View 1 (cartoon, rainbow, N blue to C red):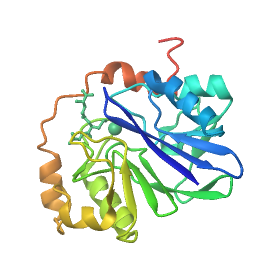
View 2 (cartoon, protein in one colour):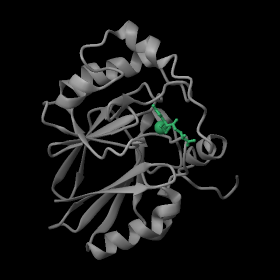
View 3 (cartoon, rainbow, N blue to C red):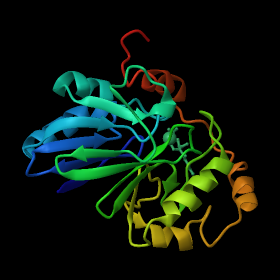
View 4 (tube, protein in one colour):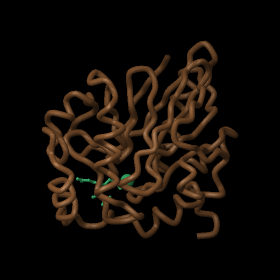
Length: 231
Ligand SMILES: N[C@@H](CCC(=O)N[C@@H](CSS)C(=O)NCC(=O)O)C(=O)O
Ligand SMILES: [Fe+2]
């Protein structure tokens, strides 16, 4: 198995490559439009054919590279069916298993940051998108976000994984790269240490963050899998 974490320095987005060396197949998760040449070159260098382009959610801060990579490689684009994106090739349900070569990747619906957020579990790793960030949790103030749903997604679904599960988020703003479920249960500043749902909702509803700078361009483009053809 090949697993790589890549970063877009501007948006602080993490893109991941998961590949099966034997089958020479890979999935790219949460690509960024400006970084598709880098990602494509790395896949070539690693001898991997891009089979699938996955999104943890409809991003608000950057345009996904999914459409460009689909055009370049013929790979399918997949994300949660709750996104209702008709330009995607596959709309995923909660609890599905996707295979990259012989590697099973399980989908876990984790709504809250946005309605259609999905986490992906494979090996001893979970890609949590913007649902569970390292020592934080994704904001809930747009794209049908809900702090109540986010609490349930994190505590009932992600925190029920083994403590040793490695957590890989879609963003980090403080220099972290990965964590574990056990660490986040104890030390996450927004939801760790057994924080109550009421306290979490109060925290999340008072973050007072500025909207992402590219949101008005990124969301419409990402609702078209990153195609800007008719925008
Ligand atoms: N400043 C950035 C946007 C930062 C931001 O809002 N990040 C999101 C994840 S991307 S949708 C978030 O949930 N942040 C949580 C936090 O605590 O920062 C920009 O202008 O793009
Ligand atoms: Fe997000």
